[in-house]
Every structure is written in C-alpha cells, then in structure tokens.
Length: 317
Image (cartoon, rainbow, N blue to C red; front, side, top):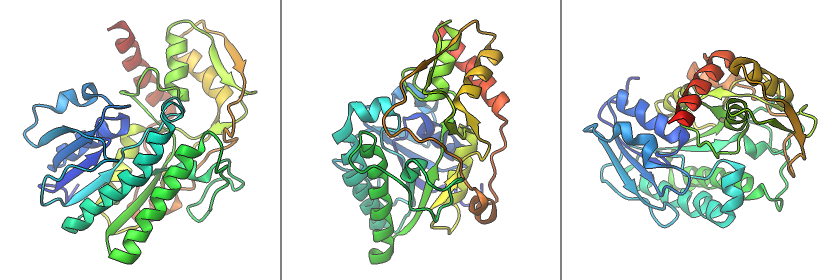
C-alpha cells in the first residue's frame, strides 16, 4: 500500500496474534518495523519467521513502563494488551496498566516525532449492546466493575486518552474498534471461541457452548482485520472505525459448523454463561466501506478451514 515504504513504525504488542500478522504486512509494504512486546501473552515464536528480515527488530519491553524509542518514528500502532478473557482475567491489574500507562507512553512517542498513532481498540467498548448492529456513534452498555471491565473499561480509557491527545496536543491519531478476529497463530489456550472449538473438535473432546448458544458473534479473518488497520494508518481518518465482519452467527451454529468442517465425532455440551457475556455482537461497517474502501473478503468456511489446518499441524507438532 502506498505511503508505507521506508516508514519507521513501532508496533506494540507486535508478537501477539494480530500484531504478528500486522508486522508481516508492514514489512511486505516496505516499512521498517520495531516490534515491541513483553511476551506476557505474545511469543517470539509468532514472529520468528520475520527475524531475518533486515527491516525487522524485536524488542522485549513492558509498554506500561515505557516504549522503546528507536528515533525518527513515523507511525506508532498500539496493539499491546491482553485481549482474551483467559489472559485479562488472569492479569487484571496488568491489563489496566497497559491500557492506561501503556497508551500514554505510546502516544508520547508519537507526539515526540509528529508520528501518526493508531489505537487498536475493541468491540468490547460496546459491552452487552442495546443497539444492534453496533455503529461507532453508540456509547455502549458496559458494567464498570464486573470482571470483564478491566479490558472493556481499559480500552474505553485508551480511546478517551487518544482523543484527548488529539484535542489538546494535536497528535495525529486514529482509533480502530476491532471485532472478533481469528486465524493461525492464535494461542491454543487462548480461550476465545474459534481456537477453543477447533481444539476440542480436533482432539475429540465435547465442544463447550456457553449458555444455550443463542448469543452471536461476527468473526473476521485476521488478514482482513490487518488490511483494515493498514488502510486506517495510511488514511487521514480519526475514527473510531469498526473493523469486523458483518456476518453474524450464533455460537451453537458455529460449534456445529466446526464439527462438520473438521469431520469430528465430538459432541456439543453446554456450560454456564460467563458473567457479563455479550448477547449479540455485529458491526455496522458502513464507515469503513466509505472512508477506507475496506470490506472483509475471506469467507467463514474457508477461514475456518485454514485455521483448522494450521491448528491440526500445530497439535501434531
């Protein structure tokens, strides 16, 4: 994509699931990439295939304590934060610190060099929504003291901080609200629905559907999500802009699809619904279409097949 060649880019959380795909895409576009991660949820293994690239540098650092400064930065893409309930419930205070202090530190780096700053926010800012599908103008319905609030409210704080830096200090910012993203390189113990269902199906375990399975999610292939992030980075849009697939599925239907695609003999069992679990989730992506020319292109069937093949190889290895 035009405008990225030679741009010196810092990607926080770059050794995470989405971050690793973003680093790869940026390098393909000719950017010089500093990948910053503390490996609390990410892993050097996710970017090992990039280590020999002359424009790639991996730095271990906790961004809540400070973001390494490589000098003359053109673009800061802030993805650092535990994103899976398994991880942010295990590290609630660390999650809040990354969303608050980490965001400030990343914004300070962008301000220092007049760089563009892109915040990877989340659909979780909408909470358990009373509006469906969710538009960017919707303010959300979030429990501020529930167990999920460390992530939900952390990201809402990150958005507020990003907007304040733009208003008061003139930092060139953009906010992306990412909806459920899936694909290869997700952690096997991630806890999110796609890796959980696939691992259970491939190992012959029952697929554990929360509640009655009527709750919905909208799943977006990781390279589609990354394409949206890159388009946003190369634009002048501030956002917030939803990045997600607007095709919606129930969790029960997803479980049945996974069983069918993998040829598994697994059964489906129902478990207790987690506290504050959103009942519905579907983005309105009209703004992304209009402002960025972006729409997801990967079909759910093909994306799930590719992810299943990757997970099967990973489990075998």
